[in-house]
Length: 315
Length: 259
Image 1: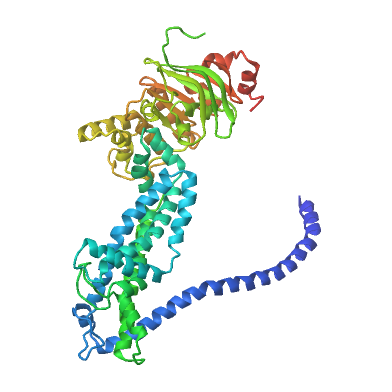
Image 2: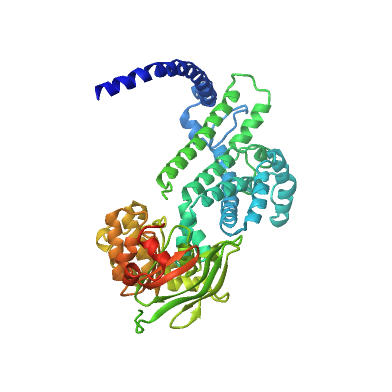
C-alpha cells in the first residue's frame, strides 16, 4: 500500500510542479482580464452614483433657500417669477396625469398584443409583427412629439371642441403609443417563457385557447408582465420630448387631461435651455425637480423588484 | 385469453400517426381499452407509446402539421374521437390526462382542482366545493391539504403535486384517464402512493398508462401492450404477457435481453 503511494508520488510530483508554474502565468492573465471586466461593470455604478451625488448636492443648495414643507405643499410653481414660489405639486400633477393617460392606452393594448402574439398568432405572424413592434420603440421621441402636436391634437379637437392646442391628453395618448412596444414585447417574452407542459395541462382539462391564455399563462407570467408595466411607467414618467412639445409649458395644478400643464421633465428642459446663471435658485430648482423624478422612478423600480420576488415563477 | 364479458370502453382501429414532417410514430395499431381496467403501454424509448397515448385526447392537435389516420372509437356512443368534426375540447372533457412531470397551475390548491369545472362554466360555489373535496379525497390528498386549500400549489411536494394533478383530472368525472409515465419524476414512496391510487381509480374509470418501468406495468395493470418502433407487437392480460408472451420480441424485452 505504502509503496504504491510512493511510486505514484514519485511519478506525479514533477508533472504537478510543471503544471503549477504554467498555472501562475495563466492566473496573472486571468486577473488582469478580471480587473478590466470589473472596471467596465463599475463604470455604470459609478455614473449612477455620480448622478445621484450631483442631484443631492445641488438640491441641498436649493433646500437651503426653500423649506421642504413649502416645496411639498405649495400649490404654485413659479421659480422664475419676481415673487418666486416653489411648490412641486403642479409639476407632479402634470406628470401623473400624462402618465395616467399613457398607461390607460398602453397597458390594455400592450397586454392584449402580448397575449395575441404569444398564444394565438402563428409563428410567421409573430416573427413579422414583433420586429415591427420593436421598431416602433426606435422612433426618436421628437417625432412622437410632433405627431402629438400636429396630428393627434387636431384630431382630438374635432372630437372635443374647445380643447386647447397644448394639452396633456394628446401627449398622454402618444406616450402611451410609444410605450406599447415595451409592454407588449417584454410581456410576450414572459409569456413565451411559460413552459409548454403548463399549457398542455390546461388544454388537457378541456380549456380553450383563450381560457388557457387568461387563466394559466398570464398568471404564470405575471412577474414578467408586472416588470414590463413598471418599465413602461418609468418610461412614461421620464418622457420629455413629447410633453415639452405638446403638453404646454405652464405649471398647472390639475388632473384634467384636457388642460395644458407642464410636467417635471418639461420644466427641466425649459429651464435648462434658458440662460439662468449657474448657482441661482432657479438653476438649482431643476435639480430638486430632477430629484423628485428620480425618487418616483426609484420607488417604481423597488415596487417592481418586490413584486418580481413575490410572484417569481416557480415551474 | 380475454374474458368476453369485459366491456370495451374505447378502441384504436388501424391507428397511424404522423408528426409534422412525416415521421410515422404510430403504425397501424389496433387495440382495445377494457372498461374499468388498467392497460399499460410498455416499450423502449421512442417506440411511440406516448405518441399513441396522446392521440386519445387529441393532444397532437395543439401543434400544426400533425396527422392521424384510422380511428379511435369510444363506447358506448361509438364516436370516432379523431373525426374532424369532433371538437377536441369535447374529447378532452371525457378523457383526462396526467402528465410525466407534475404540472400544477400557478394557482391555489383549491383553484387547481376546480379548474376543469371553471372552464366548463360551473359557477355554483357549493357544487364546486363538493367536487373539489370529492376529487381531493379520490386522489388521497384531502387529509394532507384540507387545512390549506388556499395555499399555492407549488408549495406541495412532488408526489403531492402529482396527486393534485390527478385530483384536477378527477374533478370533472372523466370516463378515461391517461397517465403518461406518471411516476418517472417521483421517489419510490410517492410512486407507491400513485400506483395504489391508480388501482383504486380503476373502480371509477378506465385507465391507459404509459410506463418505461416494467415492474410498474406488472404491478398495476390488468392488460399490457408492448410497442416497438411504432408498432403494437403484443397485447394481452398482464399475467400472460409477463409469464407466457407469444412473441419473441416481447419476451426479449421483458426478460431484459433488449431495451
